[in-house]
Length: 133
Image (tube, rainbow, N blue to C red):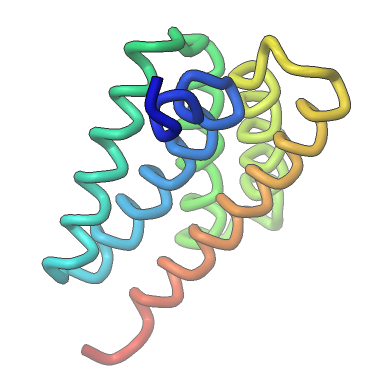
């Protein structure tokens, strides 16, 4: 089995490719540049390949998506930090559910790092909205 496919067959590899697709998609949606869109499409196709090898948790995907939406809501509207905390909790729980099948300490570290990456990506893409064109 090729190394790239072997990495995608592991739950951590699948989770990393999903995070890369989300981050690239967020950046492509706000920057409107060809390279960003190409990277987002490529990362999404790799994630779909990983999903063919290892079925993701539907509730984990839903929690992760809800967390990203709530993080966006925190930056767009004044919610006094409630949407941000719920977004961090939702994306952390979704990451935990998606990393089933690995050691508990790896799940905890992966969920924490994944949540921090998503928070940084949402903050950066919201910063792109305020920069002059």
